[in-house]
Length: 251
Image 1 (spheres, rainbow, N blue to C red):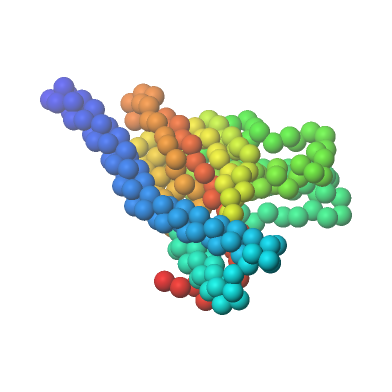
Image 2 (tube, rainbow, N blue to C red; image 1 turned 90 degrees about the vertical axis):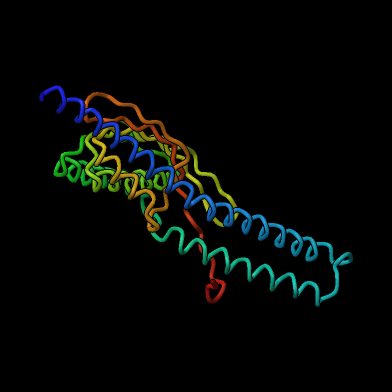
């Protein structure tokens, strides 16, 4: 009887892992089509901008005012379409504070108190964070570095809050990359390693795939640490939209 129970227990763990992987795959394919459409729209917008800019700078080669007006309308339509997709694809973005009076000192205080709140929340939820999140806490950083560092920290903070809300057991590391500007949005790559039970990992992945999340899962690997605990290594992109005011959104 004990042997049968042991076999069933091992089998249930395998099923849990397969369920986690299945949810990730389903979520990936559901969002893939929308990502492709967004990328196509982005390319079309860039083409329209380049055409109009060329006509404005090389007036002798410009077409008729009617064609310029037509291209302008097409560009505005694509802008509205782009914003419509992004409003439905991701709705919550990091709010990056600006420090104007004494930027280096204000940033240091912001970092100290924000990290303190993160660690207290994690401890309350029995989530183990790494000893450091990778941000300099001693000395002062230059004011030129602050906008990038603040953006990186806000993204890490949102990801840590998401992980903590999911109740993941251990966060081994979170490493933000360099921000990349792409037309109307920024991409910030993030490398993540976490450990948790199948239920914890599943909750985290559901939160990532939620429409209100601005994180996109690029790739991942799953390893079984020991019975009931899995290690996830993942590459994510934080997609941060710079919204433009182009009138009403269109469906």
